[in-house]
Length: 50
Image (cartoon, rainbow, N blue to C red; front, side, top):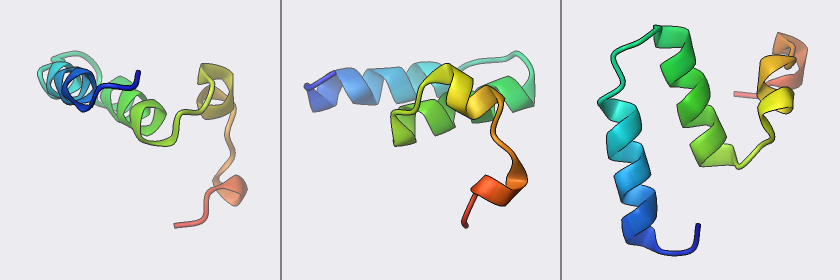
């Protein structure tokens, strides 16, 4: 995804998601960090540096 307009559209779509909150947060993490889904799904708190 190279066009900022496309990225903005993706973020709006995620914002409009009405499913599980944890799924929505995971989608936002994927969008902001560009990690693979496996990296997010199997991440441990010790690997996250806030």
